[in-house]
Picture 1 (cartoon, rainbow, N blue to C red):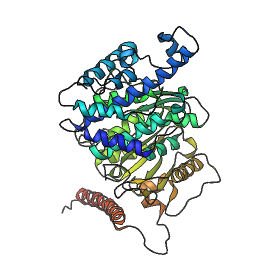
Picture 2: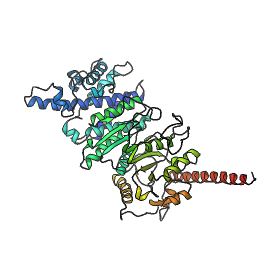
Picture 3: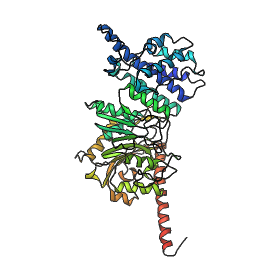
Picture 4: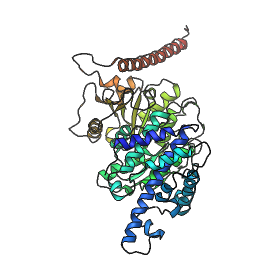
Amino acid sequence: MAVNMEIENNLWAMADKLRGNIQPGDYKDVVLGLIFLKYISDSFEEKYNELVADGDEFEEDRDAYAEDNIFFVPPSARWEFIKKSAKLSTIGQIIDDAMIAIERENKNLKGVLPKNYARPELDKTKLGELVDLFSFNLGSKAAKAQDILGRVYEYFLGKFGSSEGEFYTPPSIVKLLVGMIEPFEGRVYDPCCGSGGMFVQSARFVEEHQGRKDNIRVYGQEYTATTWRLCKMNLAIRGIDGDLGERDADTFSSDLHKNLRADYILANPPFNVSDYTLIQEDARWKYGIPPANNANYAWISHIISKLSPKGVAGFVLANGSMSTSTKAEVEIRRNILEAGLVDCIVTMPPNLFYNVTIPVCLWFISKKREARKDRVLFIDARKIGTMVTRKHRQLSDEEIQTICDTYHHWRNGSDDYADIQGFCKSIQLEEIRGHEYILTPGRYVGIEEAEEDDEPFDEKMTRLTEELAEMFAKSHHLEEEIRKRLGAIGYEF
């Protein structure tokens, strides 16, 4: 059993027709809400039929489903009833009532499911046609074994990300982050968890390494209400028990997990946020107060404050975070480097995100690096990946594994690690001091030897522009230092 691309594309085409007069975020909730409803109904129906076949008299007993972690679905919310009603003009209200009934029977879903299918602006004929399209099973044991739901769900999240501006972390980046920090067991935290992709991949990682997904405990926070509900659904349908707080909230002004110290932190914070809540007297600013006009270093500081004594973190930031010359950010960067917290920096190739062209890098922070406290590993991965469309690049599993292996060999002190010109290099903190604590890998790993220049023009210009920006930043700093020293002896210009 498999969901082929034809079915996925048909579902997307139908979802795309829903737009009409409703907002993109709303029709996203329409489709993903139906996927959730179909999944739990399929799962319930399979268990229900097993109980009936066994002559069991408990097919309507909620406990018979709870023991197998299956949501109880009342008759009016079961897919068979929904599908029979697809052609009715009241299909929207019928689906809303089904969502209400499911929340009533399953307390952990209270306030999570979308209940706006009856609104006038949602075309009920198209809604009914979309219901008819869901002809394949999402929640049976066979479907769960092949993660059919995961494929459909990730496909839709990716499509919404590429077409409607949803800030969605591509699976290859999520897989790379998880593969680098290896969350085998303990507390996993994401301070800006979005739809929960980091948590899903963490659970998948544990299972792929013969562990149990309940070996990790998930904690998260999300600012946007609709995305918070989407994350709750995403975790629920995968059987992941996550603490996302009572509702959506701003991480900086309302930290929902103040006392949490996580073993693993994974995050893709929004880049370069210029309007955020900066509380000056905050214990999180141990290494310096971040600037009010850019939240990048506020995220770094927050993440560090949440790490357990042996905790590790991997997160995405804009490339500017590695070399910014803003006084407050330089101070924080210097202090966390001198504290021995920065473990590895990876620069990524362009076009990995569906709707964000800004170049990105990965930061890895660790509190368990006594043996390598005075070194940082730099990896320049800007040339990897394959363009799968004119605008979008993906990393292969082999490329992800190469980066992970390089980091793990270095981290573990293995003889298998070696500096590779143009790709990776282990650098002493003393040398980083000499470069004013700039963390751009290209500055340290050198240039890969090549017989000819086959670097695409756009990529070359991006790289050269970044390097030039660093040089300008350094020259401004030197100019200010010269002015200061001349002024100290009575000469000004």
